[in-house]
Image (cartoon, rainbow, N blue to C red):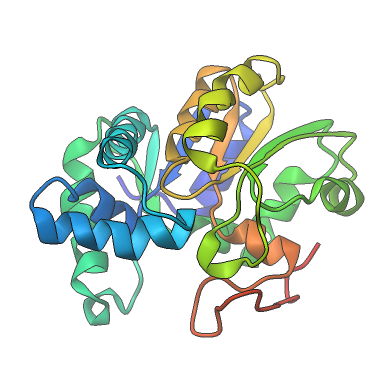
Length: 250
């Protein structure tokens, strides 16, 4: 079953617990990293170093891969590549569905661009407007902007380490394993039930959406929408290190 943007918005508005997790070429590469040495090396160079800024241990890579499997097997709705130009994209984009779908236990799918679709259509604005509480996990600290834009009374956030390829000057703690290992403790102290729970945490954080859903949250993986909200371009032809794009800045 393929769900439209309107279908997803209706599901979000029911206020029932849900986990919407997206998949792209990076996730496909990580999921296949155990196939052979070239696949593992591709994962390190194209995904891990790009997102984390360093080469994790082999055991950490395998743990991240297993968490991805758990995320997709437990998701209520999975976002898959459905771009009109998909046939013109690289083999990893074209192969996402064949790798991710067999891991799923759901029959509900939507576009992996669902975050953008909700943003561009105004659906995200309508959903978040005047909510009493919103929770999010992202490398972008936009607490005040969310409050100002949407009239949200309380914002709970966990600010993770940024994506290394697109952010300079970060010298804080690592997302994995330090922050990852804290996340469920933070969620236990965060009111998720009936609350919008937004995630933009890369391949490491796909499972956060399920963890929020399991605590009653209305959880959706928005990915790089957080970058646009913060005024940065990290996807598309104009992306780059610290590149600004204020088209959708809060």
